[in-house]
Image (cartoon, rainbow, N blue to C red; front, side):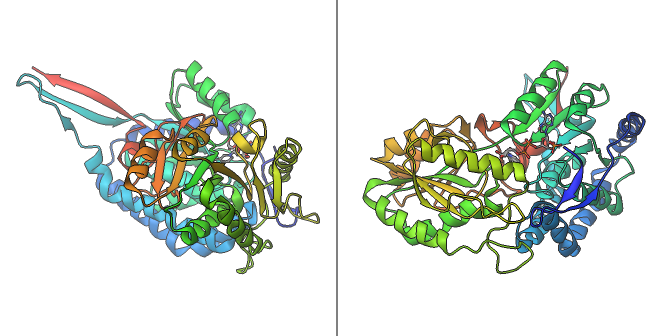
Amino acid sequence: MAIATISPTTGKTLRTFDVLSSQELERKLQRAADTFRSYRETSFADRARWMRRAAEILEVEADRFGRMMTEEMGKPLEAAKAESIKSATACRYYVTRAEKLLRDTPIDVDGDTAFVRYQPLGPVLAIMPWNFPFWQVVRFAAPALMAGNVGLLKHASNVPQCALALEEIFRTAGFPEGAFQSLFIETSEVNRVIEDPRVKAVTLTGSEGAGRAVGAAAGRAIKKVVLELGGSDPFIVMPSADLDKAVHTAVSARLINNGQSCIAAKRFIVADPIAQEFERRFVERMKTMVVGDPMDPKTDVGPLATPGILEGLHAQVQESVKAGTRLLLGGKPQGGPGNFYPPTVLADPPPKAPAFHDELFGPVATLLRARDLEHAIELANATPFGLGASVWTQDANEQRRFIDGIDAGMVFVNALVASDARLPFGGVKHSGHGRELADLGIREFVNAKTVRIT
Ligand code: NDP
């Protein structure tokens, strides 16, 4: 894919960028390795000062960065500005906590001195997606840089201006030249970078296919890898739930980021006694959502990021309907310029339908009915994914059973699944492995060195 800004709203190519030559890539890799040698010796206080400044830039320039994100990948402008500000929270979280989280952990062994010391690994390659072009990158970069690693960003090829802006933010904030560099490379070059001995670890947020490829390359090179992949997340509503709140949250959960979020609720599993009422209210609300220009403050749902995402989504909808799924709303691209797809509701897909088990990356919701709690858990677990689940019930026993029974990296009760710098984030099954954010996130890219002194 060419590295370019192509407006998802108009389809026009606005800017193109050259990929790095072999020599330029070599220079950047060497600069990362050279920078790491001195950067790892910097104090937490220095890193914290630079990271605090990065947070300030993200906040002060949220409008500029927001417009950039909206122009490149089509999310509504207010959400894009909020993303820049949210990214600052991850910086600030690690400004105040990194040193404490990476302090030696003492261990009591027969009176000897023993502890675990956490040391940085070196240059870490981050392969990142377009859907949250700032947040996904910063949630990797903030802990990695605070731990003393240096970052190499291979961003998605449709958000090059965001990639450059992120590089500029860390440089302007005071981080040494080479502490955070953006690499404009094709995916075919990624394996070479993973294999390069100067690169010590890899993190990827993206599709299952990219996860398999990057995980395999990291495995061959025996390098640590964190994979944050897709989800087909359940949103379960039981009879005791506050139905009004559940419906409102369900619609927001499905349409967040024009439906293109790994943790967006995708399958709405509703207990039989309230299923009909939920369906009625859910479809009504989805109908009221405004599709349009993401720069317009009235817009709820902007265009999908690329024509490829739109085609893939529509094929999944068509195949699901052909397999016997009921179509309650929407169901075909809007036509005209831009990658617009209307809010769509599917119901009762048979197990062979893509809507039953696959990730639908766009504003398409799938409704399923559950006979009882155990059936709801069975349906929730009937996909290859396991990222975040949202369950709605006031009953404490039901809450306990869901928390234990759902195969997911995250379970939120009576709330929208959302990332937060204070909470570990990640999945199980085909949603990937490893954790980002919080204490677990900063411990992913360090050597936990055991020391025993007798
Ligand atoms: P991809 O997984 O293809 O892209 C994510 C990142 O991985 C990009 O930087 C991409 O680079 C890179 N990449 C892709 N393939 C490889 C590879 N073989 N080796 C190394 N790097 C690779 O996502 P898409 O944009 O194609 O979206 C497709 C689907 O992925 C979506 O429909 C959705 O299901 C899922 N997805 C999930 C996300 C999440 O948050 N978990 C985020 C984005 C997508 P390049 O752009 O140059 O291809």
